[in-house]
Length: 319
Image 1 (cartoon, helix red, strand yellow):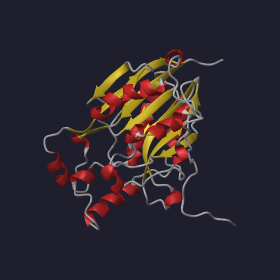
Image 2 (cartoon, helix red, strand yellow):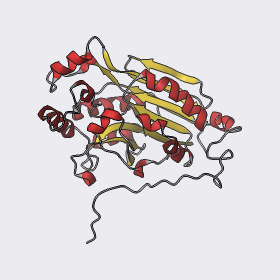
Image 3 (cartoon, one colour):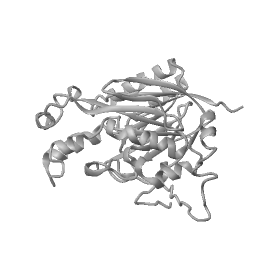
Image 4 (tube, helix red, strand yellow):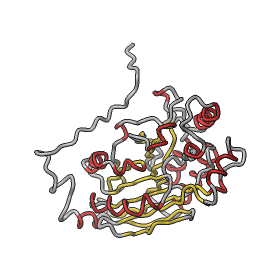
């Protein structure tokens, strides 16, 4: 029998900035909390583990062959997530123990791309603690391209969770019509958009995505208070000087919208916490009555999308 109800949790938290193990410990504590509150799904912000590279625009990140930028990048690589090496093992154990599925924003250093190049990856772990997809952000935005590599379509996948079909994208990927269409075509009815954390990003697009997809639209952001920047972080003084009087590098904005675009959880700003709500699949059915982007309102005889989900790498070994 189909379960028409799902309890979701939006984990708007700050990382222990660029500290992999401490940040993953914090993630695990929120998974446990979500389990205690009866959540079926919890999501975390973009690049949360181990953190967003805020220093790039604050320290002259475009300087070529600069020793300080090299040191910062090396520090980032050391704290990035190696999925194949089991860096998310404890997270998977917590998901299984508490029977909570999750989306986690990570900085991935994959072994199939030398373990030295970084990807902004959105990892989906199911209730059994199994990693079901690792979506590498298709195109890093602006200064992100100085530290992150372009991803591929391998992770453009949806997942069954109770009666729902869930999918997700990183940050400005959510503005890419064809990336969204790739998930709509796979039956998505709960869309999870993860962000580094800014109200300006989530307040408009979250209702829009709900209305376009006639789906639930869940925006989950990180936080980054200036006070959380470690004093021993490389170029700390330069970063603080450039920030000026601001108290937040990322102020959140996590929210949840119903399939008609109405807010179920209003955008949460400058507050850390787990925000929960129960959603009902029947509301999707109601809104699909007059519009279904990949169903009765589509014209595949006129326009059709081709998606390459092959994982890209530079070598194919044949033994």
